[in-house]
Each structure stands twice: as structure tokens, then as C-alpha cells.
Amino acid sequence: EKNNLAPFTGNENTQKIIKRHKIEDEGWFLAKQGLYEEAIARFRAAMDPSLINYEHEKSTAKWSIEKAYKRQGKFEQALQMVEDKLKSLPPQVADDNIFTGNDWLNKERLELLALIKARDNRDNESIYGYIDYVKTKSKYVKLLPPKGYIVGGSDTLIDDFIYLYDYMHDYDFGIAFMNEIIEYHTNHKDPNHRSAHAKDVREYTRVKQAWELDKKTGQHGLLQEVIKTSDVISW
Image 1 (cartoon, rainbow, N blue to C red):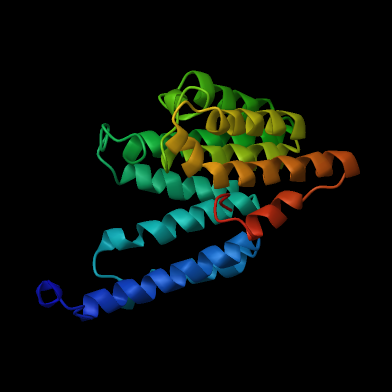
Image 2 (cartoon, rainbow, N blue to C red):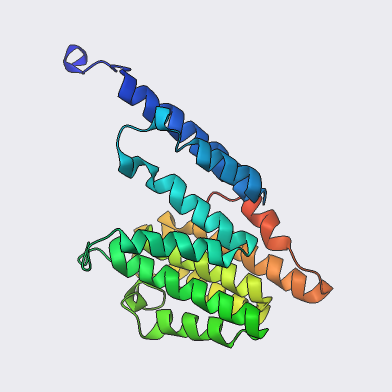
């Protein structure tokens, strides 16, 4: 059986992938520290032609740059990247997969437009409207507790909402949202689900505690301390 295993070839294409992933990981580490400019520099380095076998291999770095722009409050730059991507796709691409293609990009576009409007109007009404749309009217309703949960997609949506509540300093709504997620995992009828998501519960509890302390002290920024040391809560 051991002799039947194919040896690791280490060919040029594979080496490019290994080097590119290493640089992307460095970017993610920097982003988790809140060092977004340094992270963007690493993501750009990961798109160097010498590390790319096929054009689609730039997608992770591009998405990471867009996300870093959003975290910096550079919403127009992030929006431009999303709109450029939308223009490059056929109208109905990946309609059967709600995590890719037009559907997900249009959701990101709506989020960024809401953030721009909130910033310009000095009023968070547009952000609340976006959150309500995703939670109650969009095709993503079934992916958010208490309606449902899918590993990967639901986690990304939850991370986005954590960012938005923290951005607005709305600790009460943020804490209530965390309570929904925690209750869903801890009270799930499947014991395997409860066991598999025990760490998630601990990390979402840390987010909740950070917001409770922010609210109590009148300070802001403890969420970043959670993100730095969490392998569940994304930057």
C-alpha cells in the first residue's frame, strides 16, 4: 500500500501554489492584528505573476484586499473591486451556488453601499436595513440561526454581522445576535453538532464578553483582541 502512494512531485506549478499560500497566510496574520496596509502588501505580493499558474488563482488575494479595504473604511475602493468582478461575470453565473458568483457579490455590493450611505449621512439606518434584508428577505435567511446553519457560508455571514455591529458600536444588538448563535449551537438536537461547535460557542461568547466590557467602560476596540487570538472569528 505504501508503494502505491504517489510521491510528492514538487514541480514548478506546485511550488508556486505553496509559496503563494504562504504569502496569503502572512497577509491574514497581519490582518488579524489590524495591520491592514501591511496585509494588503502581502496580498498584492501573492498575485505576482511568478506565483500564478492560472488567472483564477488571484481570487483569494483579491477578495482579501477588498475585505481589508472595508475594514479600513475605504468603502469606495472595496466597492470598485466588487463591481469590477461583477462586470467580469456572466449575468447568471453560479446561480445554483449562493456562496459564489453574482449572488454573493451583489450581497457584498449592497453591504458596501449601506456602509457608504451610513458614513455620508452619519446615520446607521442603511446598515440596519441591509442586516434586516439579509436576515429576513434574502436567500441567505436559511443560513443564519435560528433558521439554519451551513459550515463556511454561515460563518462568513456571521463574521460580517459581527463587523457591522462592532462598526456601529451597537453592543446590545450585537450581544443579542451572539446569543442567537450560541443558543442555536448549544441547544441543537444533534449531539454531534453540539460537540463539533463547542469551540464556536466559546469564541462567540468571547465576542459577547468583549462587547459587554466595551459597553461597561465606554471604550471600543476589544473585539480586535478577540480576533487576534481566535481561529473561529475572522478579521
